[in-house]
Figure 1 (tube, rainbow, N blue to C red):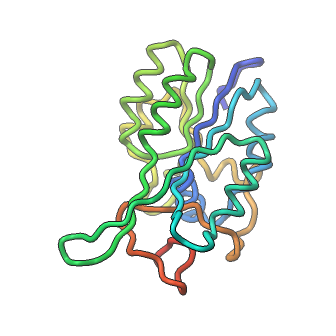
Figure 2: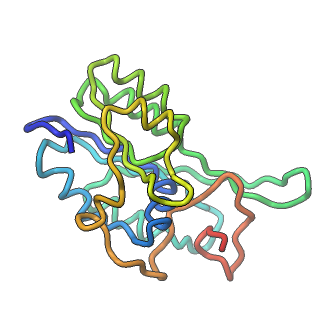
Length: 202
């Protein structure tokens, strides 16, 4: 895994991206096991989890997951989604958390030896390069065995270590549960209906 004994470790989890990667491999993430796994070889300083929430809904299917994570060792970073109408008149939802993740990572970098980013988003390549220049090692968790691969090649090349999500399945995975809330909000999804409560398309 590339971790050194007593390294100060920070986890930065792009919730929707990790959900999509795990779903492409047909398993769910066990977040309690994830914390335990990344704590065993080093000192876990902080585990950040990023997701956007639909604040105007009477009940959000994401709220139980967010609350559980908040009470069980994760630092939650959330913001309301934004609804807009595109040029064709379709209502869509936007909930990108890239800036929040980047700001927190840069602020935390002086206190960490090893950063683990759970995302395959190529937009993070420059962020990875920046914190590497501060002496921080960076691992990226995503997957290349899905079709299509979920990680951008430029991000994989920039990282010090690439961790294949499929290889972590036996340690942090569990069988898919259709009732588990989905932490996925994309820039290009239509507004969910009561029949589509998980912000997902088929």
